[in-house]
Amino acid sequence: MPDILKFLNNYFKRQPELSHHQLQALLTRAMQHQVLSKEEGSMMRRILNLADTPISSIMIPKSQLVCLEASATMGQIVDAFLKWGFSRLPVYDTDQDNIIGIIHVKELLRFWHRSAKNIRAVEFIRLPNFFPQTMKVAQALSEFQKRNISIAITIDEYGIPSGMITTEDLVEQIVGELYDEYNVELRYYRLMENGNYLIDACIPLDKFQEMFKLNLESQAHTLSGYILEKLQRIPLPGEKFRIHNLECAVEEGTPSKLKKLVIHDKRA
Image (cartoon, rainbow, N blue to C red):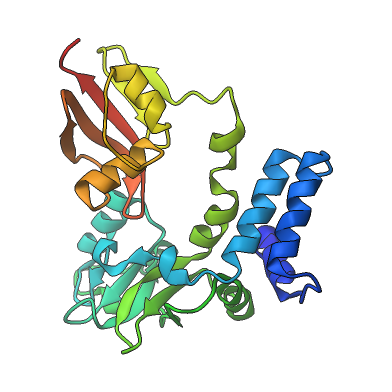
């Protein structure tokens, strides 16, 4: 991860003599003449397109953040980390408009030998870094490296927290889905012993419809996009819903990304 961030940061720092349009045209020609592979060309396009993208477009919105109250006990803190599987959680005082810090799971080790009865979340926190949500991706990458941090709280024009951004979010936008997008051998689903399907949320929507003989009206390209369009939010692990005659249960995911679902076809 640090090597990728260093490369991206150095790339964005350069002042290209060519315009954005000229660089895009050069990339197209390089791919046509096989100077760059399809995967390499796609990654370079993402880098170009993301340079001036505001981080608000890729942040985890506040409504989907998993946060801890400042008064949370050791037991509540441990339960939250175990339940959600994150390595860091924001901490707020009174309400989520007042985020006062970040807890890293490794901080718990400092208190493990002590009686945890009276310990509260506020004792673990590190002061948060705040980025304006209008900050561009290129600048955010630079700030992450300069401050040697990997997480920041985004704020709106009034200074109120609007979400959270991490180095993983930034890098994933560039390199995250390349394997899924280009590996033709990728298996999007697996038939389980009980007859249900374990399906990757990134499965192309047309392939999903073909599998289950559906005709869905949607502008989405993937199953994940269709579900987001249908529910207007990202469902969490354990949540259930229906797509026509299909019973769907979220098997794996985070507040910012749907990953795997279990599908039961009632017609089978």
